[in-house]
Image (tube, one colour):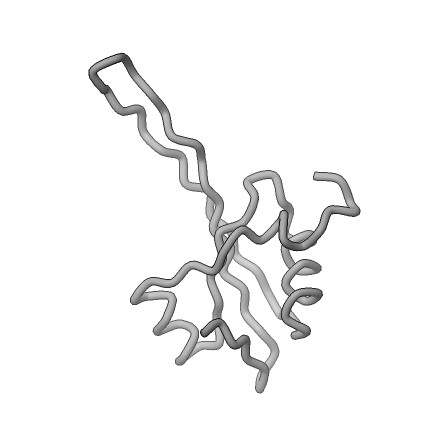
Length: 96
């Protein structure tokens, strides 16, 4: 991705599930769905700029979807990338 991309293009949406909500409350880790082409440095800069917090570490996962057979042929959904962001001690993000 180009270096001067807006943070809202890098971070698509927060990931809210039972596991990510537990991690938010207990471990100060926040999960986001991000652009597949985004690097860890771009994700860190986007989170710090959007939420005004300090990021300690980032873990990323790319989920490659399996092909599905449908009536009209075979389709493959787009890949998705998940970023789990750990914040500095004492900082939080208000998602709700």
